[in-house]
Amino acid sequence: MAGFLDRAKEQAQRGLVQGKQKLDDVQTQRAGSDLLKKLGAAYYAERHGTGSPAATQQALQALEAHVATHGDGFLRG
Image (cartoon, rainbow, N blue to C red; front, side, top):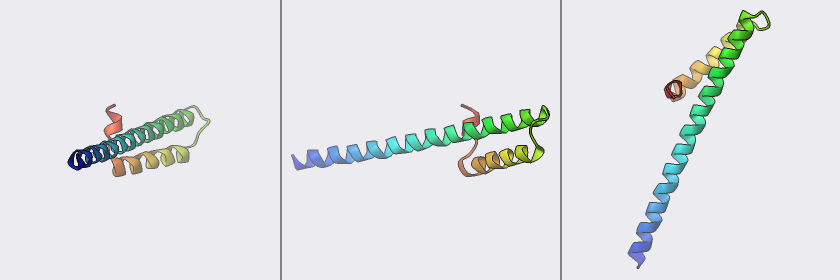
């Protein structure tokens, strides 16, 4: 009986780890999408005279930092 409980506990731990990894992946993708949206908004505002090149550059740098850290997988989804 103890062997069964040990295996069940290990399987539950693996499930928790996999669930946390999936949650982290989703949050990372969501953050990348948000940064991409902010870049688009900054560029649109700049092109229509209500934004600045500095704001667009800042948004681009934030997006590039995210891509450098987490990759560009969010661009494909």
